[in-house]
Length: 286
Image: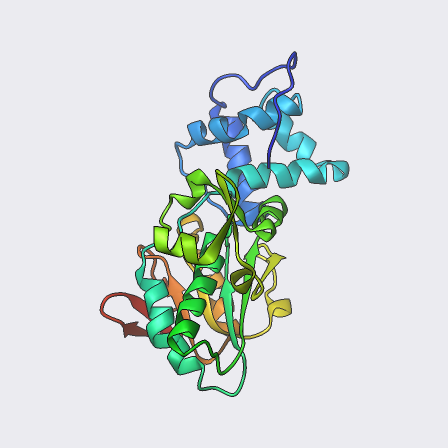
């Protein structure tokens, strides 16, 4: 969310008190499952200072009181956006996208149904669009033909971020985070000298949808592959296990789960078979 600073209002001053910080931690975990560390007051201050100035809110306790009012839905969403939105990289960690292109798509394209992929907590859109670019690279290697359509569902709890994702436009700073010059030339077209738009061949197979990972996944349907990367680290062990169990329920028999490099299966290892891809590691639903 872009927030403009309004002059002449009272600013959020200094670090929040311990008591106010604990109240805010409880709110954030209940709202979206994100668990803040014991000493992350500086993060709250840096991410919320401009927003609190705009709404003329003095401290976290007043913020919590305001968010509890039925009429303040916009404020609640803005706070969650500020605390959870992180810009990520194109083709982050490389291996998952190579595995998708070189192993999973050749296998799944032999099925008689469309290949469905879920990018969970897609943030600013780099992951689902990287997935779609990998599909394009696979298609090119197959003389431009896909046996079955590929559908990509990208979800995030931030409505404002998803609206930006749908525009499929990125500035020079974003482009420089993991995107090779070759892929820039192949998959993007210039809008200005400092902004680029992703081409339709890539964007047309990606559908964005608002979803809190704490909510039901029933409306999403079944998937062949789920990318849930670099988000589970922010949840408690109990919530992480619950999310992984429900992700397993969305996978078709033999479907694949791809986690972040530093993430594991927690207490649900019995639901998946580990698949070594050399390099890289993925999990197959049992």
